[in-house]
Structures are given as structure tokens and as C-alpha cells.
Length: 392
Image 1 (tube, helix red, strand yellow):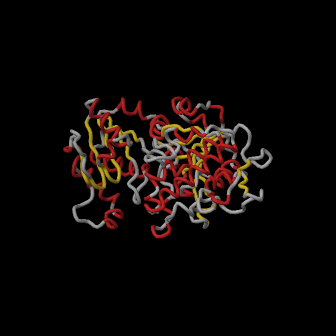
Image 2 (cartoon, helix red, strand yellow):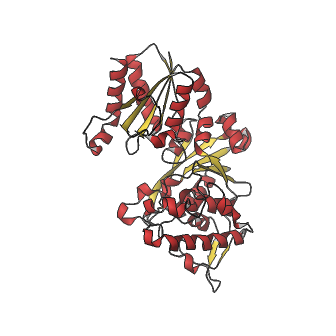
Image 3 (cartoon, helix red, strand yellow):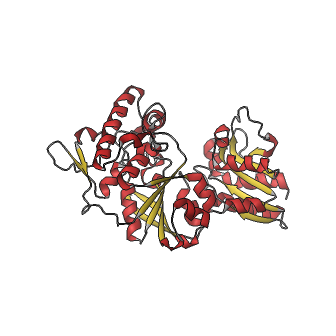
């Protein structure tokens, strides 16, 4: 029996890589004669750096950078060699094996909502300045390009904080440089943005790719403020104010880069509080689909084809899992290919009107166990679930 073990993270408990390791170890005790392959899953959010860097034996680095609340935080990033990547991943990125060192950066490491206590969440005051600082640290490590996962942000600053750290200048009506993070709270002061080549701290030829599966445009009812603003602390009464400020500031950036402002309507530009828009316009970054990138990066297709059984899962499995997320997409593919399937999740939610086979799903946390205790026991609960399904 060939088994593919492919999990996403169990949020606040286990990384995708660690989850796969625990499940394989437990399976080997129960089925020592089986063959196993692992494929840690991720999109552009939490776990993106760990998964992509770890699975190609890249180097992990840490830098002290500006957090979303403008305090100092420790942020991790990866450095990988392009010649270690799957050809399909390189093709998706438009790079060659000779590209050299590539940085794997997770926006949430420096500007994540997990770094922002609920009481302090505000799209008006949070910044992506730390992202710019991580990019500079990666360049110091020899990176020739960067892949940035855009999930889990606490910000709505169009990545202007990152651009500011990378040499962009934000000028007031007197032409004086504004020497503080250009958060939405500061936007009314900005009359012009300049990016003199002598100031830009990114080397010529340094390419940035943005990994995300969000298709929201920058503005409108499906835009960044409308969809993601509330979880970042946006009061409903101030939505129109933020929307208008976003439009005005985005137009200033488009003017600075001689870019048609129709780019605001492009799918994905609303990702991470408009960070995708700002990096695309400011640095000519390109958006690539996060899950598709990970799928190619880890060689999931060939591993899937070899497998007789697929075991997958994540912290919570529900209808949203079946709408393009890694474990859900993989589970549906296993069903279509008539492979044996098990889905293990911390908790199971409503699967809607789908005909997903519930007999193949298992919630690993005992009923009634408080969340804090369930998170602490995730590894043990996974082991127990494997024992109950496969014996020993």
C-alpha cells in the first residue's frame, strides 16, 4: 500500500510539516509494511515559509523587524536554491534553475494578524514596514528574487510601509518627506509619491512573486476594505472613509509609477489589505496562485499518482475547505480518482449540500474538550486517531 500523507497546518498547534511527520510515525507503528510519502500543504498564509523552505532543505533565517503595531518582532524567512525546485514550479514562477538564491517570505511573519491583539487591531495604524525590512535582509543573504505569501495580514496599507523601507518617498503638500510609516492614518498628508532610482534599495533584476489565492479586487463590495477590513478592526461606520482614502492613495501610487489605475480592478489586488496592489504597482511584482505554486513546488501531482491512499486534513474541515483550499481540493481529487481517503481534522464543520463522504472524515479532538486543551494535545490526538482507524 502506497500512502500519501498531505496535511495543511493545525492552526495554533502544529505546522503542516510537523503534522505530516507525526502521522507517518504513527502509521509506521500500525502498518510497517506500507510505503509513505509526505507533502506538507500551504497557500500564501501561515506555514508558507516553513513548508516551501523545509521541503527543499533550504536555510531558515531570522531578522528583527518592524511589526504591524510598529514595535519590534522576530520574523523568519527562508533562502532556497532555484536548482532544487521542481521544473513545474520554476515554470510557474518564470525562473530558471540558474536563478540562484530565492527568498521565501511570509507576510504574516512581520505583519500578521496573529501578532496583533484583538484590542489593538486597526487598519488605520498597522504597517507592512517589516516586510520591506525582511526583503532587505533577504537581499543581504544573496537572494536574487523573492516569493511572498500574502495570507494572514493585519494591515490595509497597500504595502506602502514596505515600499517606504525600500526607498520610496512620501511627500506632503510642501514637498517635504513624511518620515513615518505611511499607514492609512497618515495618508491624508500624502500629496505625492516618488521613487528615485538612487534611493530604491532593491538591486536591478530582483523579481518579486506574490503567492495568494484571493481573487478580490482592491475596491468595491468585494474589495479589501469590504471583505477583510472587519477582521482587521474596521468599524462599519468608517468603511466608506477607508474606501475613499484607499482610492485616493492608490491613484497617487499609480501616478508615481505611470500605471493606469485600472489595475485596481484586477483580481487579487485586494489581497493582504491591498499589499498585492502596492507591490504590483510599486515593484512590478507578479501574482501567482498560492496553492498551485505549493502543489508544483512539493511535487504533489507525481506523489498523488503513486498513492493508493490519501490521508489529509487541517485544523478545521468544513465547506470552505472544499472551495479550493489544499486539503479539500486533494480530498476531492482522491475521490474522483477512486483512491482510498481519510480526512483528519481538529474539528469538523458543516459540509453544506456537498456529497462528500463523511465516513472518510474524522474529528481528532474528543467531544467537549476545551479548545486550549485540544490545541495542546493535537499531536497525541492525531496519534490516537491513526490507532483507532488502522489498529495498534
